[in-house]
Length: 193
Image (cartoon, one colour):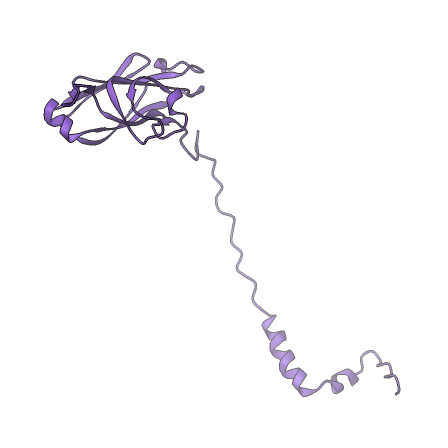
């Protein structure tokens, strides 16, 4: 078997030896590689980030279902640990650490029960932070309630825990043992504005 002879540069001998089927496959391949370049677009306008932008609002909350809820409770919250809610007395009180942030809202979630309000009538709840009265709200209807209001910065001391309270003007007495109960407490805390 003889080795193929060298083909001189510029010769048409290579083209003559390529079968016709190869041209049929090669021509569409070459044509598909010739695509128009995409239209260039300028970069979008660059903008400075929003001042004091935060992707989230940090919250310093205690929920009755939290494993560490007991360490936040100061008074008037009754019931077994790690339940979603607990009964309160007249003035449920919790403490919350908040670091050095001062632009905070007082938040509280609670329930006023229908069967208690049938006996007590409308209930006024006063919300206090560090012994300052933030607001008083008259609730005329039972149900799930959410309170949220901005706290004046001068009422907060950076690095010190905040004491949050809710004081009810009327208590409900249980028919069985005359125990005095207030509201169903779900959670409370501080949320950054």
